[in-house]
Image (cartoon, rainbow, N blue to C red; front, side):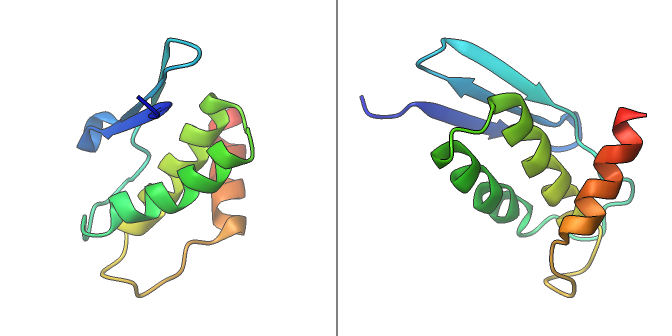
Amino acid sequence: KNINNIIVTTGSSGSILYNKKENKFYYADAYAHKIVDKIGAGDTMLSMIGPCIKSNIDSNITLLISSLAAAQSVESMGNKYTIGKIKILKTLENILK
């Protein structure tokens, strides 16, 4: 009843967000180049999606930012590195070129 957004991660196929209010699906690619450790990628994605949705950030942008963060997460073992804003912005810049 009170669920407005559903996110499904599909591994190497990316992720899908469904927004109930808009009755619309949003899609994002998986951006990881080399997968080292998949554990925690969903947690990383969720930690980015939650604040973005709460801040009413566009669903496409929300899913993109979250996917880029998850990609950073799977490219290192465990929690060896933190998710970095600069790396996300550089990756975003390369995607938009």
